[in-house]
Image (cartoon, one colour):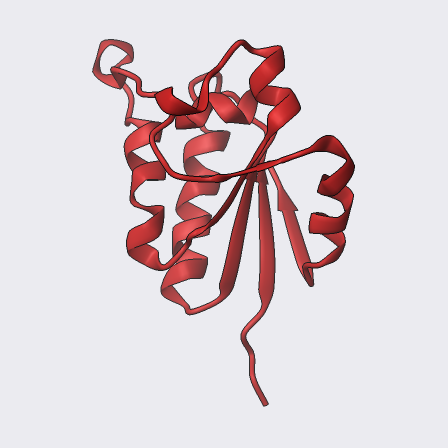
Length: 120
């Protein structure tokens, strides 16, 4: 019997408004270490986590650097809401990871295709 779970983490939090973004990224990496089938959806202000930042001026750890490490943990199913990018005027070429754009209408299908959904 396999204990491998199909987990979707939905990242909605802005990177530096609280510790939520960093802590949830750490949880994503832990799931990857324990060989879970992990997908990540960046939605709403969570898309800012993928932008390059100079966190040292804020006196905090760099969220985008942690995002860049996702593929090293075999986490390569990374989705970004097209609407969230457009609403914030962000272009994909300025983000720190390769990802799959997902439309608003396809997000519910993505969510329902996972056994476990964790939102932060």
